[in-house]
Image (cartoon, rainbow, N blue to C red; front, side, top):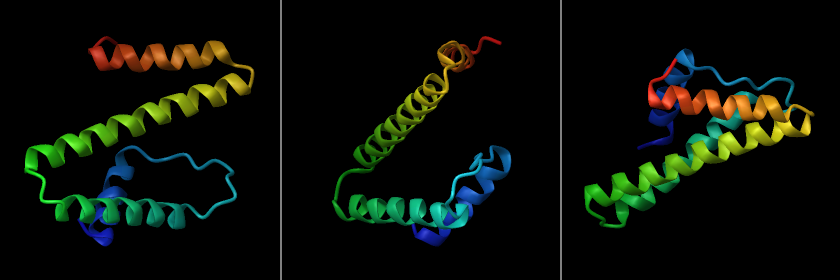
Amino acid sequence: MTEDTLLQLMTEVEKEDPIDYADLPFDDAALRQLACRLIAERSSELEASGLPVEALLATMWASTAKLVLENLVLNARLLTLQGQPDDARALIERIARQSRGDA
């Protein structure tokens, strides 16, 4: 997966689910490019490793799961630090319900 291809795909995905950069003092395009570069480098390393496709997919899914967990933790931590621990719990509970197919 090349950096440019990944950037194009990520841009398409973000149309459906945009990232809220809020007032962060960073260039969102530069952050997006950096993320794509890091993933493209990791992709090249994995592809060159000679691992079977199943192992590559397992590694990618495990990495994705870790990133989702990290995102959940960071969002919950932010809400807690903002004095909204109940909102953090509600966020986690809402996501858990959605993952089970509950409304």
